[in-house]
Image (tube, rainbow, N blue to C red; front, side, top):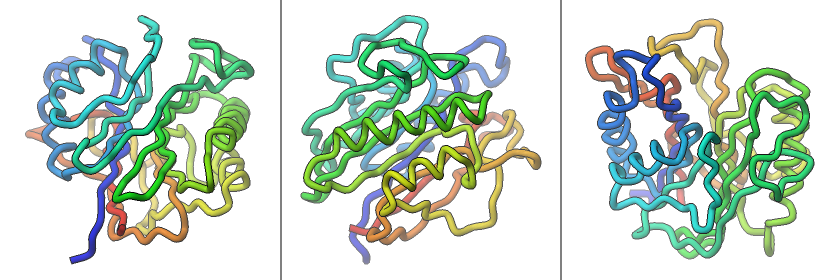
Length: 254
């Protein structure tokens, strides 16, 4: 059997009572069950404020939330990284905001509807050094996402050490042929999107289908890495969905 590890990118949908049947307390057990069923080395999530993310962290034990020293802002939603300590060693971690002042928590630029950010961690997986990141781009303007992608690329270039492998995951709110994707691949030409199946929407309005949508949730990794499988997990429980996005599951050969 090929030695491998699994990574997941999952927009968990923020907690709101407006979701009725799909409000957070109903979805959390199913979401945790689905994510843990893949025995992931790490999970990148998007959306969620601190209380919701703390609840998720408790339900994902023994996985650990990587958020050392984060100055949580009550009204902000955060992309996050969760790691399995038996598979991943965290060396350092942090956040930066996708703005003209990325070091200032909560900063916003480029006509973004909300402040957006990236969370990152320098880790070892099977003794290999990686710079991993989870991010969430704005959902309205194409130009905003392009400029946010430029900040994302620049900051990751600064953080990168000794040519370590990059693993970039998130909800990019744009299709794979977008300007935002072009910016990222231009900055890191060694990265690729391992998706090889017919294109489909990764977002759905708690229905399991969105024929007019796009695959806005991506995982980008080095071309030298062989991917054994990548797919959207569409598990639901009698019409209850874990989120309004399908988790993206990616199994990477060591």
